[in-house]
Length: 76
Image (tube, rainbow, N blue to C red; front, side, top):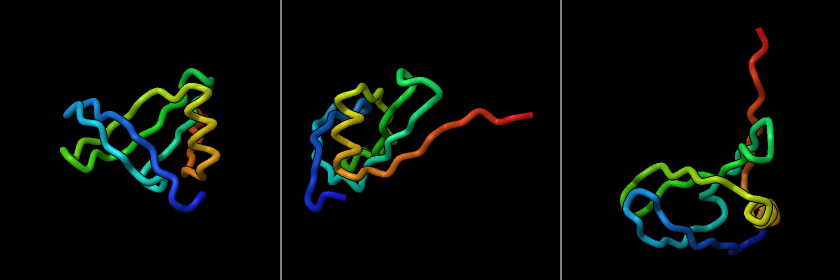
């Protein structure tokens, strides 16, 4: 992870702009690129925030070493 990398984001719950270190984010990939999203916990209101992640956001978060998770369909 890039030391000291921080991102400014808006909380969709309290609508405040917050600045968080990269380690506070998680990037999740779905079956298609359109299903990619990132998530974080708002330090002001405590909301669990989830937002869509387009190509530029994916690139920035990945470059900063943000933890990633890939969702795969369950077989059965």
